[in-house]
Length: 345
Length: 205
Image (tube, rainbow over all chains, first blue to last red; front, side, top):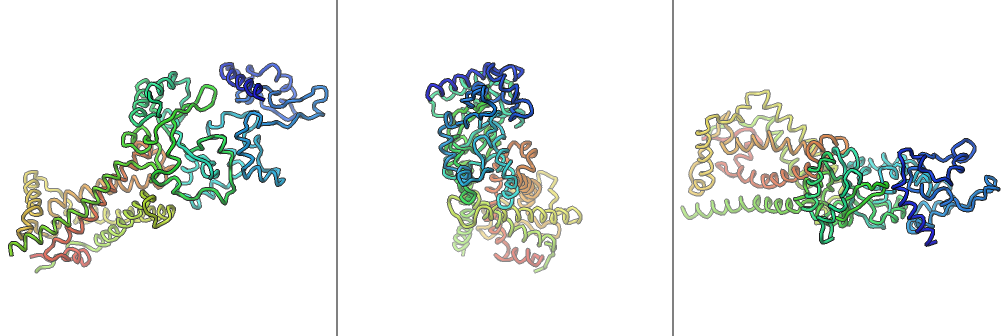
């Protein structure tokens, strides 16, 4: 198993560099005979181009569909794909989820791995909105039902991963994704070569980027000019991606706003800054939690704010001073008036 | 004492709706920002109350604006165009609050039909009503629906900038809400200006 896993990892890593401009060119030789039938009518169809750009490309067909005896196929079906072979942690959490429980009860419409992670098109889990769309694909009414009780529902659905509330037992974090052009497009590693080195050079202690270092990083990107208007857009996600499979029933989903909207809330204790890797996976770099509440970050983290949860501490001090001045100035003035008038008789 | 009708009915209605609304907005605003310190109202209820009172005050603001735009009462907001005179009057008013009032000197400002504000008030209220209150309403509106106003939020500099401006003004209004009634108590009796804002009539010598 370990050897197979290692082999798979090497293949996946190699696929990143092997990917050609025409995606079907990148298909492994051994897959081509399979796809000759499986791109035609009559056999379960696989989109060759989508498969060629999926993260599973390097595994080929037999990497997952083991035990196909061509002499007996298609009459003899291949073995059931064992996703857990590579994704043991995610599978463990899936097994504890409402989805697995429903399947165990015989509900065939409840999702298995491939239902959400379209099997031949699967891209890195954290990329884009694909997985949220997968949730909404079955839970079509979710957008409307959230609107009934959740203020700014559309914004919440955009910046909070579904699992952040629907997997209530797991830990969350904030990923500050780097976008360019005023939030139009995620920045890919190709566009900013040396990004990782730059982050490491700034974060010499390895404690994560502090607010000044983060501002410095963005200033540098802006000066470099390769990223037009670099912008960090925050998103609340699950700290350990595998745990996002630990989805619970609707009744236990988080509805307590204070789980995010209060100082020291758990999702804001862990922060990463990310760009999209060349292989489609997300490259994350640690940042200190202070980047969410420092006055220095007003500009660098301008596109992420959770009322109460990521409040700027300096404003709290000003507010306390205003309250003190508002109460004490009239009292002192009043006391002086009474005192001095009495003296004057 | 002569009675002067200096606070017309629309202004009084606007003032008291605004006053009550400000207090609710400040209290709900504090609850939203400091839900970890005390928990009187559930968060979504507080958000909705804050939004609805905010909208009420935006509509109410137009009552004030239209009244002053379409009546000659706008003269009460006309600035003193002679800077030397304005500076002299402002200094005299400051001197009164900081010194003369303790000796029992008379207030240098005399209320008349088109001069209900002293020089300090006239500057303060112009800045508050034409700049600070509209900015507070605008940033509040953007925060109400970040998705709908996504473009404007980005133009403003992002949600964190919008919120920082909204909270900074909130800090100012918190101080204002204490100082304003105190200054209003400095009439010829402590309740004279309060009564005037209810009846419309100021008593003048």
